[in-house]
Image 1 (cartoon, protein in one colour):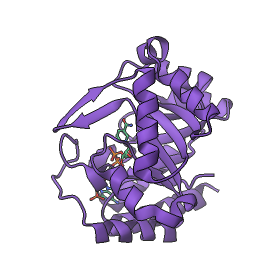
Image 2 (tube, protein in one colour):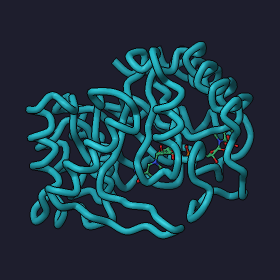
Image 3 (tube, helix red, strand yellow):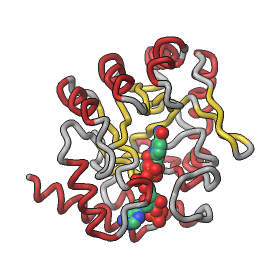
Length: 250
Ligand SMILES: NC(=O)c1ccc[n+]([C@@H]2O[C@H](COP(=O)([O-])OP(=O)(O)OC[C@H]3O[C@@H](n4cnc5c(N)ncnc54)[C@H](OP(=O)(O)O)[C@@H]3O)[C@@H](O)[C@H]2O)c1
């Protein structure tokens, strides 16, 4: 069971080659600890991370400790971010090695969900590379509990819904191309995580945020919307606004 709002953790660990409207400094350890505690206090139980999010996993691994079991952790495979540049490797071997490293970095013996971080060629990755079958094997070994893809195309998203557990798709007030993926996931009872629901920070003001939440949660099948923030006031107001939207819809 995941909370309707998940915490995206790119900004905990990476401030290069990101598409946010404003440059930012990485938060201090104290600020990250306080943000995680606040998120839990507000009922958030979902953390979205990736090895490609700079020091995000390292920081979570150091800070979660005994509270690891209180969180549903989503991580990724496929993107490697080194020396300020991204590259991709969707091979079987790299996928297994990445998940094994993630377990060490997060100091845990399981990851709740691992997604293939698509570079845009969703179907080619699923058809011609070893990542998807590696994730199935890792599930059988008990190292991960669910698998899926952060996809970028409708065809890819539909395939993920057919063959995997969870799809991470983009949906926001300006971009609705992937709605058929959400519809299919709802029909097949698969997990749906929404990324970029606030247009990566281009939505402004409480009314803009409320409207974005209402738009996303009006769609079928949404399990959780992953919103990245390092601002505790934004976190508080996001939870409050989403609660109002969900109560209004009930
Ligand atoms: N797999 C992928 O391909 C992929 C790609 C992108 C993202 N993701 C995941 O999805 C998460 C969300 O995506 P995203 O970070 O691109 O987009 P997003 O959640 O739409 O936007 C995050 C931005 O919105 C700002 N924000 C949050 N709440 C706000 C509020 N109440 N008022 C004004 N601004 C607010 C944040 O700034 P402040 O810090 O100032 O609040 C941050 O810069 C990421 O953290 C990541 O975990 C995955």
